[in-house]
Amino acid sequence: MLRCSLKPTAGPAPKKGKNNRELAARPNIVVGERVGLTLHSGGSAQICEVFERTNRLARRAAQPMPRAYAGEQVIAANIDRIVAVMSLGQPAPRWNLLDRYLASAESLEIEALVCLTKADAAQSGHGELEESTLDEIETYRRVGYRVLVTSAYTGEGMPELRQMLDGKISVLLGKSGAGKSSLLNALLPGLNLRVGAVNQATGKGRHTTSGAEMYPCGSDGWLVDTAGTREFGLWDVDSEDLAWFFPEMRPWLGQCRFGLGCRHDEEPGCAVRQAVMSGQISPRRYFSMMKLKEEGYFE
Ligand SMILES: Nc1nc2c(ncn2[C@@H]2O[C@H](COP(=O)(O)OP(=O)(O)OP(=O)(O)O)[C@@H](O)[C@H]2O)c(=O)[nH]1
Ligand SMILES: [Mg+2]
Ligand SMILES: [Zn+2]
Image (cartoon, rainbow, N blue to C red; front, top):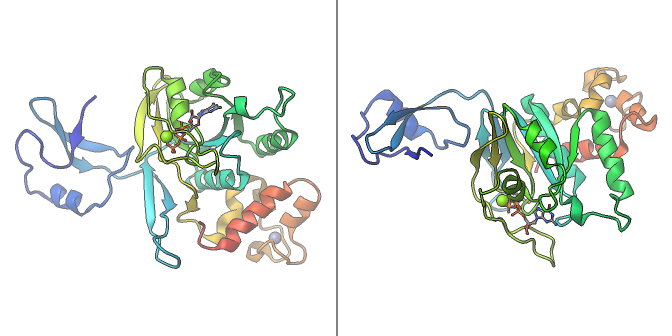
């Protein structure tokens, strides 16, 4: 693999041109960035140009202290697909968090795939998934998302997952300990990424992966492993637009008595709420959207 750096390694020092000044001013070069390289003898290379991004996946950075300004944390650039990873064992699934990953993909207008993992640790005792899990899977499928049930331990769902990664740049998103690096290890035998046991007392992961790295996967596809986070705050999404990022709500937007000004809360004649009452929108997804909206700062 070609190793490259922003600073001069072996080889000639960079010219003091416009591009280098721009590079120095740019705080973050993230995985997925398309760059121009200067190749040096000896096999090293230096980034001399960063091309414009087609998109960037970002989250609201964790706040250093309550009420402190939380900026944007860019996770990856130029991505085609989010693979939202959720553990069915420990840490326990949090469907509202999954909704955030999916809304983030919708806001970027890219595809999202739901990957439920640790299926081996989720059996209800009868060799089946819990009824509540099956209901959630059905909800997401009805919205139109592809949902895969996988296990890095047993290999369940791995051939399907590998196939879905062909030809595109996909990013694994999920809590710490969800099993993202383990999925990559199962997909790419020999990769041997570090994985970390979940704390049995708290059910939380240990933040084993730091930063994000991209690996070739499937036929002409790339998969990015990321550092798991406890929370995932949406970035660059206006709370008024949020319902638009829940695709099952789109047909009703603008149909409310107060039109596009409706907050879908207690307004009379709200078409979204009527669709919830008539079973066309899952109440849990509706409340998930409202909760995200109420929080205002999307964290
Ligand atoms: N039972 C079971 N355990 C799994 C499975 N996949 C991963 N694990 C375990 O879950 C723990 C966390 O796995 P990781 O792959 O490190 O999780 P991660 O999402 O990469 O975590 P971070 O790097 O902290 O974000 C490890 O102890 C794994 O062995 C699975 O399919 N079944
Ligand atoms: Mg990891
Ligand atoms: Zn409404």
